[in-house]
Every structure is written in structure tokens, then in C-alpha cells.
Length: 224
Image 1 (cartoon, rainbow, N blue to C red):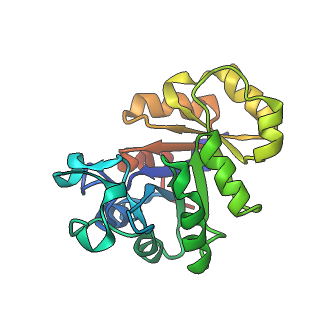
Image 2 (image 1 turned 120 degrees about the vertical axis):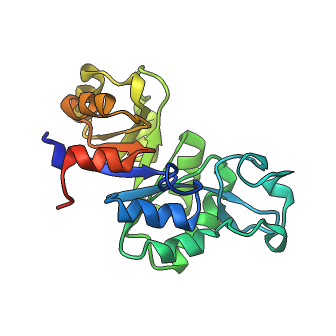
């Protein structure tokens, strides 16, 4: 596989330019040439899907409270709803990571209401992907797998992922080849140096999720 065939996915937007998981970060990633933007989605206390990776608001927003205890009206200014991110990425691919499987049903409903199911795909562990599959039998899934050991055939049969999503340091040519033989695409996260990116491109991965989408775009060349 040549470099231009690799998808450049922006991890939480463009966090070296703007605060992660914000609309500004998402827009900066698209401006830098991302093929897709990865965002994390959790639920507020009143069940609204919003962009946030951590379970609490402390690291990014200086509020030492779990998101699950915060109602929409009490969110810090700048925490975007998933609906806002869908509008901000109109026409572009969005990769929705679900650190909390409990957010799956509401997030799928939000995507469906926005008419965005055809451009959104989902990543997360088995529990999260199982919840997405139950809510949307046709969803495109990227199963996050944290071991070099093969995914159980029964799990693959039940989830029907299109992608296997690995931490980049776990990947090796045999592992990539095994996924290919199984008819699966390989995505990985989050190499941020050109050297690591080149190694993965040479290995034949199909998608790279990075905090430095500008560096990856420079290696891959202009979007086609």
C-alpha cells in the first residue's frame, strides 16, 4: 500500500493548535488536511452526548466534577455537544470514540438525527462496539484491541467490525498481515513523529490517528 492510500485521522482534532475535543480543534484538523477527525463522546447528567475524553472536567476545563454529574446548562463554555461537532464537520468523516459504552445509544441517535450515519464511524472496546451494533446494525465499527493475540472469532462474528484499531507500538508486519487475511482494515493510534508514521505506512496500515495530522499530511501528500 502506498502512502496516499492511508487515512490521516486527527486525534481529538488538532490539539497542538487548539484545545482537544473542541469545535476549534476539529476545524483546525480539517484545515490541516485530515481525512477524518476522531472525537471522544460521553454523556452529561441529562443525557446529552458531548465531546470529552476524561470522565471529569478537571484536566481540560478546571472543573473537578465528573461529567455524569453536570447538567447541560452547567457545562463550561466551550464543551461542544456532539450535534455541534456533526454540524462543524458537515461532509467530512467523523470517528466517534466511546470511552463509556453507556453513551452509545444516545450518540447513535444523535448521529441518526443529523443524517450523518453514512460519514460517522465508531471506535472503542468490545462493550462499546457491542452497544453501537445493538443501536445501529449497519454501523461501521473500528474495534479497539489492546493485545497482539488474535480477536476471538466469535467476537468478530458478533460485532462485524470493518477495522481493528491498535495502539501503534503493538503493530508488527505479521499482525497487520493477519488482519488483512481476515478481511479487516487496520487502524492505529497515536504516533506523533514522522519516523513512527513512516514505519507504519511501510507496514501497510490503512489508517493512522495522530495528534500531529499536519505532519502526517505532509508525509502522505495532498488529499486526493
